[in-house]
Length: 74
Image (cartoon, rainbow, N blue to C red; front, side, top):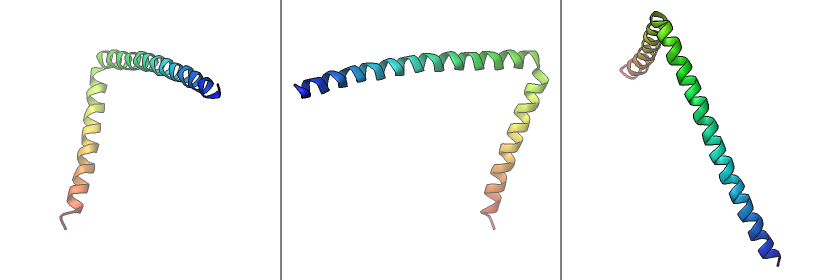
């Protein structure tokens, strides 16, 4: 009888975990949509700033990669 009880509890726990996974996926998707939508709206309202940020990030990444590659060529 205790083995049956453990199986029932395991099955219930498994269903709860699946429900939590599904709920988390829904919340994550909604949060992603909200962030992407907000970012897109901001970029449309401030195109010059958006271009500046992208250029700054690209420059920083390029500089970092250049430093890493240049360091190995001595």
